[in-house]
Amino acid sequence: MKEIIARRLIILRGDVSREETAQAIGISVSALQMYENAQRVPKDENKIKIAKHFNQSVQAIFFDSEQHEMCYSALETIPKEVI
Image (cartoon, rainbow, N blue to C red; front, side):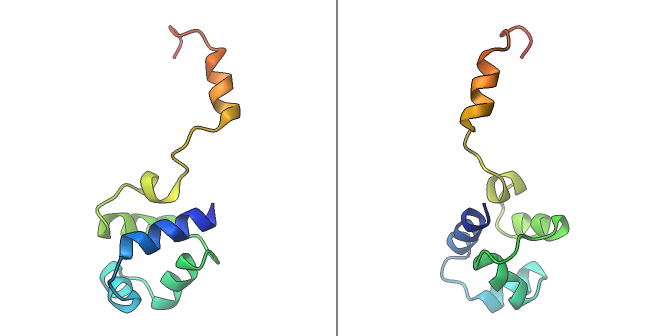
């Protein structure tokens, strides 16, 4: 998952420098670099700062948006009126 988050952050940052982006978010350049290199996942407070900066939801950036096969299969066994 770290790798997916790293790719998303790099894409969101685009052509803007790490320095400029980190300063705008309010985090250190080294922290942003570690996030983009999949060495570390941000703490919750930094996830919120990053999401606000990029005008995205925390969910969209930091959590898997695809349904997992196992979870999806479990949902199929639950009656529709319960869901």
